[in-house]
Length: 173
Image (cartoon, rainbow, N blue to C red; front, top):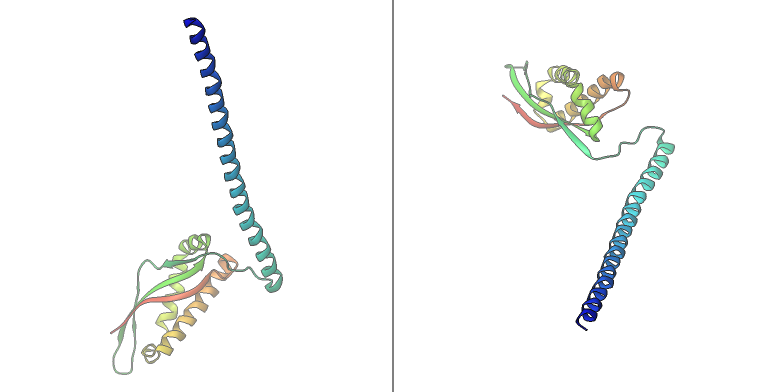
C-alpha cells in the first residue's frame, strides 16, 4: 500500500509540473506577442507618417524640408574686434551660436567652423558703431551674418545648413 501511495504521489507531481510549464510558456508567448505587436504599431505608424509628410512637403516646395530637432552649435570662442567710431574706437565682443536642424547638420557645421568664423568676423568687422548701439541695428547685423554664413557654406555643403545666427553675448565698450 505504501508503494502505491508513493507511485500515486509521483504520478500526480509530474502532470502538475507539466501544467505549470505549459501555463508559463503560454503566458510568456502572449507577452512576447503583445510586445511585438506594440512595437510594430508604433514603429510602423511613425515611419509611414514621416514618409507621407516628406513626400507632400517635397512636392509642394521642391526644396528639402528642414525637419528634425533644433541643434545649437556654439562657436568655440567669442568674436573680439575693434570698430572705429566718431569720437573713439570701440571694442566689441560677440558670442555666437548657430541653429541647425538635425544631428547630421550639427556635425557638418562643426567640420566647417574655420570657414564660418571667417565669414562672421568679416561681417562683424564691417559693421558701423552707430548701428550696433540700437536693437534694430543688432537685428540687421544678425540677418546679415546669417546670409553671409549661408552664402559661404552653400558651395561647400550644397544646401542651406544654418537656419539662424543667435547672439548669446554682446558687449561693446
